[in-house]
Image (cartoon, rainbow, N blue to C red; front, side, top):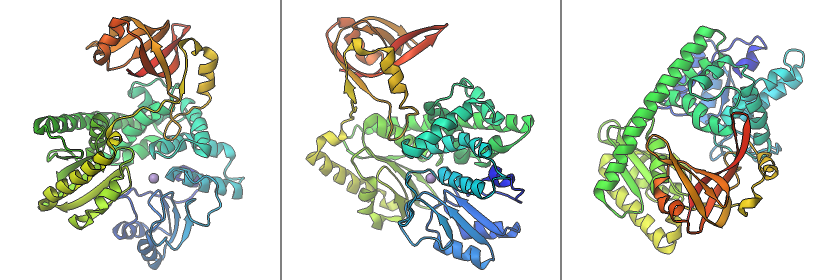
Length: 467
Ligand SMILES: [Mn+2]
């Protein structure tokens, strides 16, 4: 919006609410500050659609408000120009747009009205940002989102946004060869970590500045900050694992007390612990006097929001959805909450023990000799992969493995052959050692890739699991 409206000579400034002090939505203090800057019109992006009172306040102060958003309307909608495909009477067919995707729709509408001032090329140049935001907002990579991400990745790879290119190179990725996984696991975390640890404005500077000096400063700042984020996140993760190992408990719900963890990373750590143990996980940290802040992540099929709703009397505030929740409460209530959630998870376990078993969804079974270039290039046509459009997982049953070759500084990776197909398994080499050393037939699951190296091309199968 800053770039698009900037082309219309608009007199602009932007405001990003601090996730710690303000939360994500509109708030009165922010609106008052924005008014003091001499603002006449506020356009919100991805800040929710139900800030009725806040929008009324802005109107009282004499400002107009346009809300662009993609969240569910679970309360009284703001009474102003509201652009959100999830509104009941909105005919727009793509309901899964990201917050940025909706802003892009506004940009497209402006371009149609003002074709002399804004060109379609101006819009296309924005698609790199739409791609990053669409992947980062974890909306389905299907329909229009997938199309925008596909062309947005081409825009990223054109290298035209120099600040972004600097970040890409600084993070050790190959400029010009970025895919959706690189966006999800490298680019987004760098931008995201700035909002978690310092200020989201650094990311905006990287993407909108126009001097070499500013790009470099922003890129260096994001790289350094992300290293720091990773460092404290790893410490918190180790602490959490130690806590679980120490208590040796058999609970079906993990509630971990990490008093030293930075609140910007507890959500990520809760997610990693949930993945490691396949159990719903909440991490609590102290906040203010005798108060706790909790962040939870749940496994598929277990609705965390519903479980916390049953304990709502224990919280000062709580919110979220099936997979992720947050709350604040009196420290004194922690023990009661722990017992309630463990009891509830235990009863779910008794009725459905499989719920707590990690599962791998196989899309298709093939024979080893069916892994051909034609098949692989066919599978590539479904890219970019991501949320709700995951890479197809192939199972090959009853293959014998041979020729293991260990790699990595701790020999944690392994290459081997499965009925003549070259395979690679990352990080879990040790876990399956007997499989490739005994030659007994096993089932493998993963996906084929074309390994391009020194001008030659070879098919290799990326193994993600064996049995
Ligand atoms: Mn959003």
